[in-house]
Image 1 (tube, rainbow, N blue to C red):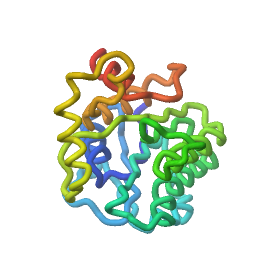
Image 2: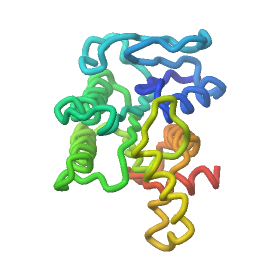
Image 3: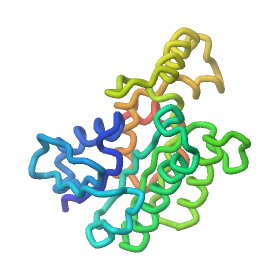
Image 4: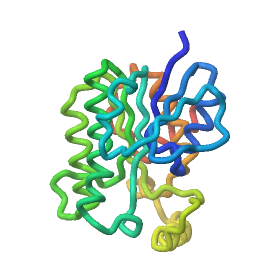
Length: 221
């Protein structure tokens, strides 16, 4: 039986690539997008629900599917106010997981970050870590938390600091051996492909999927 999937963050880099892959994936009959603004030119296979994702509970009746892909995330430069940053990076994924649990969705995938740690003194790492912790506490049967390193690719909006970081990483990546391999830039196409693979292979035991795991999945499948 063909499936229905929910995407949060379809207007972003990884979410957009994920959407493109799912549109052509014959295993999926229906794609639901929850977003702040409409994406033009999508096929009838895609249904869009437009509203404030900071109040995701308003969509509860329509938040039904076989799988949820949460690709929500912001940056310090884009969202300098810490309270709003937390509402986005912590609040939206946790709210989505709660709705998934309440509506009987058994597969939930969310993009976090390498270094996420609820006990970290760094705001970014701490926020991601607390999100991971509280998503897992909900006990959704098939939960996968993807922890990429710096995500590569070109975004529509300017992210100067991030672009500088990518340039530096590309220069020093050849020096990354052993445990340092996990810090190599993550290709967003690989990230999207790994999410789809995991959603369709829910017998896998890992919950946390690191940047190395993401690369290995895409190379083998």
